[in-house]
Image 1 (tube, rainbow, N blue to C red):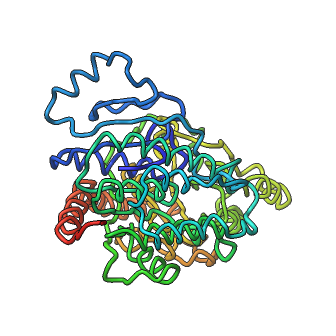
Image 2 (cartoon, rainbow, N blue to C red):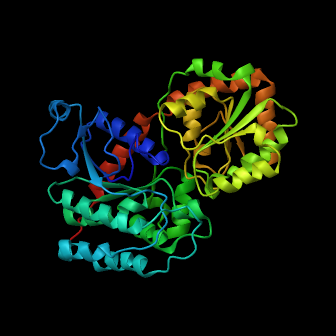
Amino acid sequence: MLGWEYPPNINGGLGTACQGLTVALARLGVKIDFIVPRLTGKEHAPHMNLLDSYYGGKEESEETVKNKTDPTKNISWFGIPSLLSPYARPESFDKWIEYCRAELKDDIPEDVADMLEDALESETGPVGEGLYGTDLFAEVERYTKNAIALAKKRRFDVVHAHDWMTYPAGIAISMMSNCPLVVHVHSLEYDRSGLGVNPKIHQIEGAGVKTADTPIAVSHYTKSVINSQHGVPLEKIAVVHNGVYAKEVIRSYRNEQHNRTKMVLFLGRVTFQKGPEYFIEAAAKVIPVIPDVVFVIAGTGDMLPALKQQVQEMGLEGHFMFPGFLKGPEIERMFSMADVYVMPSVSEPFGITPLEAMSHDVPVIISKQSGVSELLRNAFKVDFWDVEKTAHLIIGILKYPEIRDDIVDMAREEVRRIHWDAAASKTLNVYRNTIAGFKGRK
């Protein structure tokens, strides 16, 4: 399995999804080698075998040895030194494929190599400022080289790559190992950038989903976008919705708010894709009706400075908080203090944060343009641009506790059925069917 982040070092929902999925797959007896860029070295996963390639031949820790002898620990952990970050700006792209060809010789078919080289040669094109960081493609190259070096020493039944930055490594390793490739699409460049997609990223995504024996989409919505953007037949694409594990509400946090000021929460990347400007527009319609309300925009992103300025120009700064990027206990605290969670995404392949909010007994308002809306019955759904309706829903939830209590009660039961064990079971079936239909790379 190839991924670019894992808790506690996360930039978005993919790391959380990888954690939930791998833990559940391990319970089903799947043995996983998880290769991830090593960002800080602080990753801790007691359910895994922790093997850090950065330290190579050094003596293993007592915990690692214990995990290796425990038959329930089915995941091996590999960390690769890298500055890879999912939202970096592409400035240069060293030709990693030359390395792949030199190392794998004839194992990569010409049509796949040509497809990837097209991505290298295409123009970068306009990209939203701050959406990507510095020298992203060089980091993708570094990750790919190290992943190939690790994989040479091992054999696999299937290679599973998460999102576009791991697709080059996934393609190369599946060719080298002569085993099937599953690619997991959590988000597409189209979702992140709209019509201003980065051509290189778009082409690498295309190479991944077209080469894969089975692409997995996190929603039927994402399945349709893969089909329309990359021409992959719908019947080839599997759908596995994300899950969540229910948590106990940390009720003590609710007492922190003076006079029980109402709190409406937006938590996620502050980018075009997430629709934060619509959150502010809805807030402007709520505040005159419910003056004792605070709107929280938790997260970082390229739109944050402009949104702060927008709030100031509208005279709403007394009703807004911008706590920045949150993780771990900070997220728990924020969810537990919120009265309403709003996800007004313009284009959202899935959206795991509404499930997390529901697991904290918080009613959610989500856009109809999100994959998670396919899954949830006990959530309020609106078009992202319909700020009038969003505002009315927020007002109704805040003014009438019985509405809130009813939706929370129903959502509590619903979230218990949306768990990672179900997602893992579907993924295992994808593995079995993919392996059964695989005819070899040679």
